Image (tube, rainbow, N blue to C red):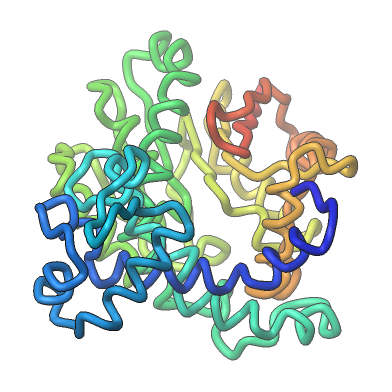
Length: 335
C-alpha cells in the first residue's frame, strides 16, 4: 500500500470496519438476497429476518465500500460482487470469510502487541494446538483458494506423472484434500491423505463431494511429526506447512519428507516465499499472521528452502510463481 498522507493512515485504522461489514453481509446472506431480486432495504430485511433500519445502514455501508450500488432506494450488485459473493456461483469466495474474517484471526490480531513482545502467539489455542478446531473450519472454507492452486499444481506435475505407469502421492496436512484429490483424478495415482482425525472428517466429506474413487485413497490420522508417513511415495505434497514453524523444525520436517520419498520422487511445496526487499508484500504480511497464531512461524525465503533441500539430500527442481496469487510452487527431487 502506498502511504501518501493522513487519509491512507485513516483507511488503515478503519480497516476493522470494512472487515466487519463484509463479514456480516456474508453471514446474513445480503448479497444473495439482492441477487434474488430483493432490491430494497425492507425487502432484504424481511428475507434475512432483521429490522429495516439496521439492514439499510448495513447496505449503505456496503455501498460505501463498493460492494453494492445504490440508486434511489434500491440496491444492486456490481459485477465483481455478483461473481464472487453470491452463494452458489462457481467462483463464490464468501466461505473464505470464515478464515480471513473469522474469530480466530480477529481475536489473535487484537493481541498483536502482546505477540510482538512475546516473540510469538499468546493465544491459549493456536495453530499448533493438537486437534485445533480451526483446521476443521479451514478445510471446509478454503476451496476457493485450494481448487485453482491444485489445478496449477497438477499442471506442473503433468510431465512427471506421464512418465510413470503408477504413482503414489502423499498429501501432508491435507485439510480439504483438494490438492491430493485433484492429482488423484489421474488414473495412475494412488493417494494417501494425512491430517488430524477431526480434520479428516471434513476431508472425507470433500472426497464425497468431488466423487473421488475411494478405492484409491487411504487416510493417515495423526500429528505429521509423530505419525509414520507410510512411504515410499513418488510425490509428497506439502502446501502451506513450513510457515508454521521455525527454521530448525522445517529442516527436520524436510528430512522426514525426503525419507518417505522414493528414489526419483518429487516433493511439491506451495508457500508464501519471503524476500527481504518486500517485492512480495503479502508474504511479509503473512508473517505477521504467523506471529499472532504460532509460536515461531513465519514466511521463509527461497534460500531457506534451498538450504533445507540440500540438508535433506534433495535436488531443487524449480520454482514457479502462482498465477494470480502471491504464492510460489517449489519442487525438489530425490536422486
